[in-house]
Image (cartoon, rainbow, N blue to C red):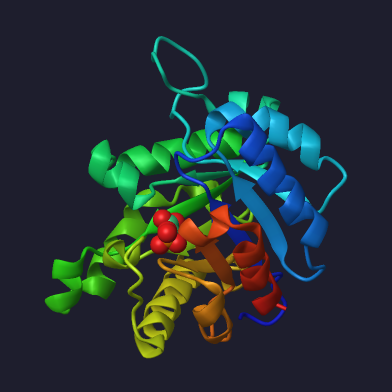
Length: 249
Ligand code: PGA
């Protein structure tokens, strides 16, 4: 944890949740929310408005999982950042590895989306993380440094943008890097943020993501420069998500 920052625990529901289940999950999270960390749930776009309404007045914020780089236009099937904001979202996940891999999103694409998010008043949660081959070749930090340099727009620091370090090979696999590897990567990210955003860079939140669960959350969240977690699978079970939130103290 970085002294002085408020930890964030964000749930990435991915493509899970019909209305009844999603509302029940969100309400259970709100009912059990501990007072310390900032909690965010990122449901499928179809549920953003309903959850924002249901969670109004609770400490749980709502985020989107992606947005387009344009504010509007002929982009069938896409969602613009102002639409997410209009629906009640305050955050948006960008550049998740599933989008980088499945939709060939590049660093410039992610950066343009982050600019659009900021222009719409959303706080971007920008994901970075190395594939396993790069980890094995000893290139993990280089790959992530390149992603940071290419994906974060100039306004990122001023709006309190959030970085999520998610090694691709740890997502949904039950595997995590060693604590030493997480700490080393987060220290590198902190140094890059401080250099890129003098002032706010020292306090911007750097989340860890990839197979975070109640049993490993406390140890991971205790590491220096780990200011919270981006949680996939475990965010779909209220008790698990709340146990992770409680570990953020
Ligand atoms: P996981 O996913 O917690 O299921 O590994 C994390 C993510 O993709 O954000």
